[in-house]
Amino acid sequence: MIQGSCLCGAVAFEIDGPLSPIQYCHAARCRKASGSAFGSECAARSADFRFTRGEDNIATYEAPPLREPPAYRRDFCRTCGSPLPVPMGEAEFVVIQAGILDGDIPARVFCHIFTDQSAGWYEVDDDLRKFEGRPPPEGRVPSNEDMQG
Image (cartoon, rainbow, N blue to C red; front, side, top):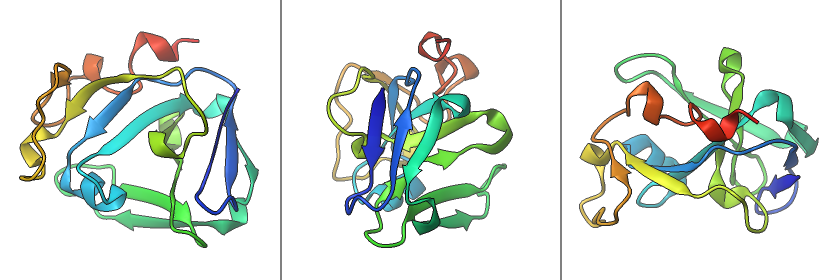
């Protein structure tokens, strides 16, 4: 079982299934939401995910779509502001910022996306796959073998 929580511990969750690999998203919105050079995102199936504490402490921010739906949504703790998992509606999965997962997790990084929006002060110079924008369907989280359970 994989567990996670916000910085102050008011909100906690568990995942009883596999995680997708992690992708580094360099989109401007992900950089602003993470406060870093990129967002470190992975996913879990909605059926495998549950909050164990603090659902009433979750706030949501939804920005309008830039080019195409869906809208950009971020859930966060009302107390400490930590990012929290975001259920993706009908997609049947939850997007999770890898940094809020507790302990070592089995998922590893597999690619960088939206590198055309990378911060000028950060050089993407590793050997991972890189996509200037949204990757093709076969390269997206969670569309990969690790989510098959």
